[in-house]
Image (cartoon, rainbow, N blue to C red; front, side):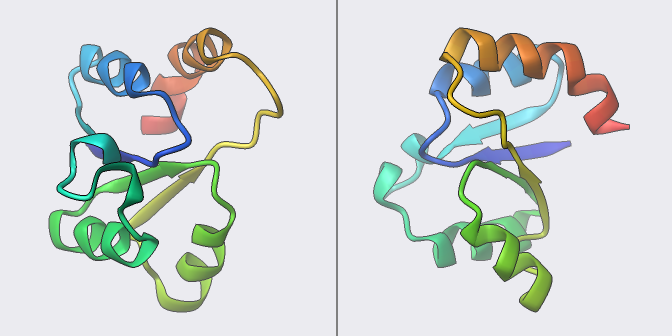
Length: 98
């Protein structure tokens, strides 16, 4: 699968997801970096069939109303550290991909 991580997620999580054998891009690697507008993220996800991984609930409305982004993984884990988030994703990633 191919993933695009939104700005509020750590870039280290992209590296972790890549270690599972999936393509993963962080908004930091885009031309506008973490200032990339949601509309551009949606367009990129549709064009390249990317799963947008985000904490931003605005993407939910866009997904439900306009079927954009291509696919969406909304992370709602409360206020946890980046290390805890990576560990959580590592434990649950196989289930998420399935």
